[in-house]
Image (tube, rainbow, N blue to C red; front, side):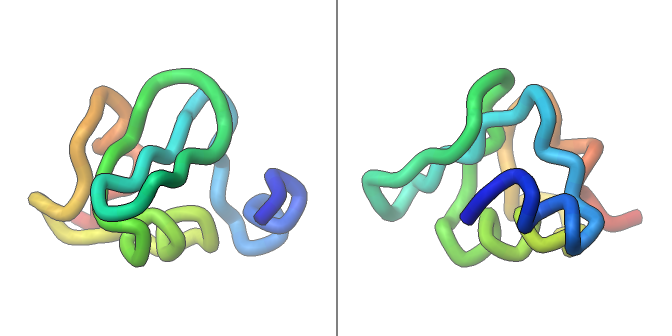
Length: 65
């Protein structure tokens, strides 16, 4: 996964660190956005998720509705 790849799919991950709760994985730097690895992968490729799937200060940027 790369920032360039994420941008291709419309995801703006600048200033956000994706942090998986269920794996020892993180990506990026900045404000933590935490959740299940599968949900973070969806975010990284431009999807917005329902409330309660993600946690962190930047959650509003990646939440549907």
